[in-house]
Length: 215
Image (tube, rainbow, N blue to C red; front, side, top):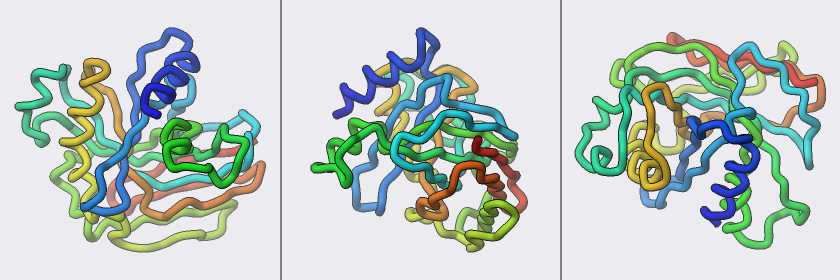
């Protein structure tokens, strides 16, 4: 499954370096899962999404962590997580699937399909990762001006930084990381389905916001 997602991502990247990733887990007891995100599918906020959906569009409100320095497989084993990342940013993950059969016949199909990732919108931020109290972080999602989600401390792991050591080992086993690379770390609002033409605003209180307009 991981080999399939890696080859598909390389094909979709058109020769550009893979610099963006997603990682997540449903609980602290579960082994995390991750996927690379093709470079052409990563947009800065405010973004306009023009690709038509394969099956149907959905979004997730997330926070992404920016890699602070170049890290290879050898240094990933010894680097402190606090030294590996320099800021946290607001992100909107665009979710869709390339799979014809729904639901997928096996969870490994979803993993092979990059965990339903279609792209990523990167918004504002800039705070140091350890400057945020994630248990008190408020997430607000508005779709077409109407509030669809508003809650505090709703990341499934409580603190998304718990995913980062595993992800560092996973990613650097495939490619070296460079300063400025990003990894987004799972939804605070579940998966919210949206209609064509929807305008989405995600805001994390005191952290920043990201905006996305679907064509």
